Length: 159
Image 1 (cartoon, rainbow, N blue to C red):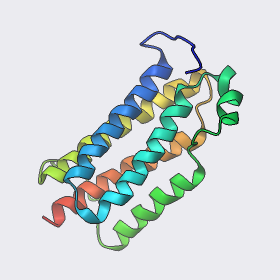
Image 2: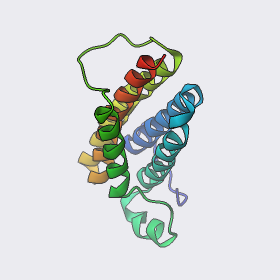
Image 3: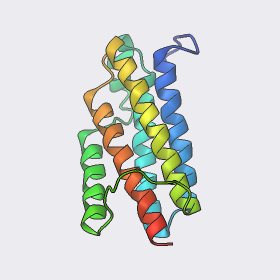
Image 4: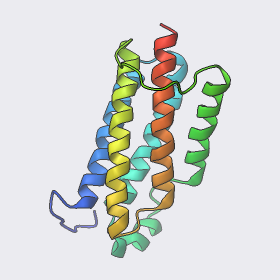
């Protein structure tokens, strides 16, 4: 972004590239998932697009990025994920240990997205050690992976 070149294996490229992969996997989960979750999953994808933009910007360009008023990942995104997680848990969908993914196509898609989310979290952690990538990003990805696990279980339970 802002016409700066970095190597393809730069931790920044690895981080936003993995978030992009997560976004694509979430698109598949959204397409396969129940209609009741599609709008909410699309909102998660919009948060990921904002996160990708922020991750793509070098620290020396952060002020220019903010001045252009590009979407940013806000703490409210974490709150949304935590609220949805709470709703699923209140409805009886809970963490119950290891599972075998693939009970349904939608469940498998949410599980696939969850594993990519965990990898994205690791990539953002690596980047964060070099240049602050934001605590909100790390919390969002961490909570999102939990939500995706629950969505996979809910998809399988409703089948």
